[in-house]
Image 1 (cartoon, helix red, strand yellow):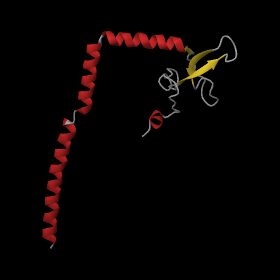
Image 2 (image 1 turned 180 degrees about the horizontal axis):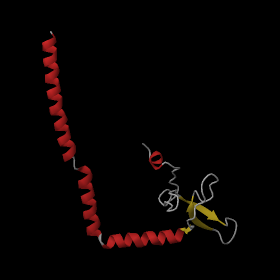
Image 3 (image 1 turned 90 degrees about the vertical axis):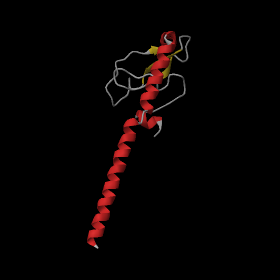
Amino acid sequence: MTRQNKLGAHYSSSDIFSSKLICEDCGGFYGKKKWHSNSKYSRFIYQCNNKFHKHKDKCLTPNLKEDDIKKKFIKAYNLMAKDKQRVIKDTQDIIKLLTDTTLIDSEIVRIEEEMVVVTILLLEIKTISH
């Protein structure tokens, strides 16, 4: 399944924040827009792609300046980098959790044992009927 299908919305990776900023109000993606494209006040902002959608309720979230997003990202990254060992341990714990197949393996064994019993019963039925 493609990422676009999983997200259930239009997916674009045309710039670094595309399809990564999610609107708190409606769950839609923020998209990059150019304001005042033909003036000296021209700049890029991000706003919810559903903000002015005709068939949906108007989204109430604010526009975000690209520079503000970059600053917040760097701040969050630096906070995470300060506690690098915790991040590494958390990541290792998540990998261990996601790759632990103990429960699945025991279920496979149980089903295989059940299949043996069913096979024996079927053979007995076949023997009796002949």
